[in-house]
Length: 322
Image (cartoon, rainbow, N blue to C red; front, side):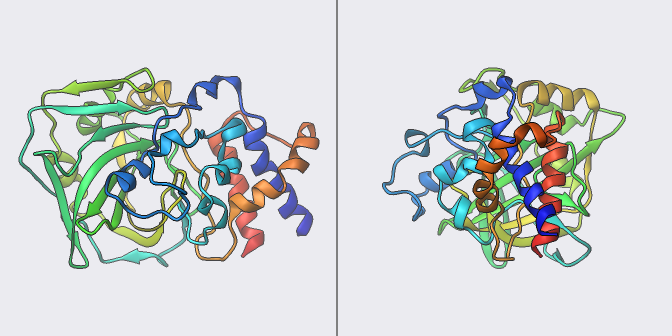
């Protein structure tokens, strides 16, 4: 058992050591998809020595020498945190009756999409005249931005989905809430997703602006959804904890053509699942065996289907850690 766990963790570490050259462009100094919200709202982060935009401190990526097993270099909580995200949902253990009651109001004339090198996101700051809001546990949240990960970061019964959307919310007192939505392949284009896919900036740090945006269809799509809920973290450095997650159980549909358009720009931008609440941090464990993986990487099986391999490794590691 110990040998199996060691091999699994060594393989996880090798994800960062055996990365393909195509991902070098990902090592951008652009801000991550959630840390910018925290910094913009003045939320204290112990892992930051000074209150500076995260992009001025370091760059990180999903693969290579700045990949997942090295994220402790960019946020110590990535290494030391005990309540990290994303996670794998098993059964009904984390099922909740909570539902986000999203409301879309004060439509703006223009909307901006940003390719920050880590994801593609819709910018919806609280100062914007357009507001996507909801209330949960007596706290009012306003959506700051919407972004995407492929493959999905959260898993259900060890199954991942082709795409996951994150609606990042903040409250007036700087609490964070993220609504996660899964997408699976269907026969037709998803009209709501088309608004994003058709306006993806293809270059890092580039933006595109659209005159209008319809959020009512996605609100209607999840009106009857059931949700998982747990307290976790940002899924990108600095991996800050205390984030309330609501993740819809039922996946929505997108077409293969839509997914292909996204992955052409963002081939892989997903963190491996974490052992939230077990007291064991998988990034720490992976980093600890990285030298072993480097020395023996010719004997470690590394799948070209990077997302599938990452999911399998973490699932195997977690099985031996519990």
